[in-house]
Amino acid sequence: MDVDVASAAEAEKPVVRRLLELNAHEFSAFDGRDLGPHGEYGYRYLDHYWLDTEDRHPFLVRVDGALAGCALVRAGSPHRFGEFFVVRKYRRSGVGTTAARHLFARFPGKWIVEVVAGNDAAISFWRRAIPVAFGEVVTDAGTEQRFTVPPHVPPAR
Image (cartoon, rainbow, N blue to C red; front, top):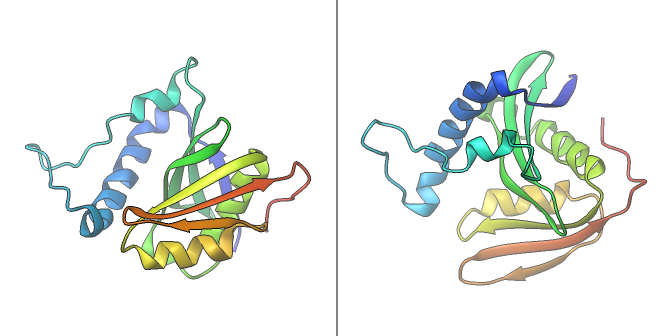
């Protein structure tokens, strides 16, 4: 299985938008959000990921050429995921871990990964996917993992 994580071109924004709709649908079980009046959840800051003035980076994940997910990275100190999504077909197959580790290697430095309360599968996933030792704090709002990725950590393959 060949996992590819590549920057999403502006022409691919509609693809990212549709993947984020799938993600929002699944996530609505945890945050209780409703569909908007046009039958979409929407993603308020999606356009920001293609602005030169923002330090935001959109990515598409493909497996053997087929779409498998997307990630939105907010680079900074610390780096954070705006979103990280892998379609169900590719979950529990190593695709998410490979994609996450690729992005950690691409953006070395301090990271914070935040998981909303109740999303136990995501907490377990990040505990496996984070390639270095991390600190973890659990609050009523959710779980937060803080860690630093050194510049020499190669992406998983």
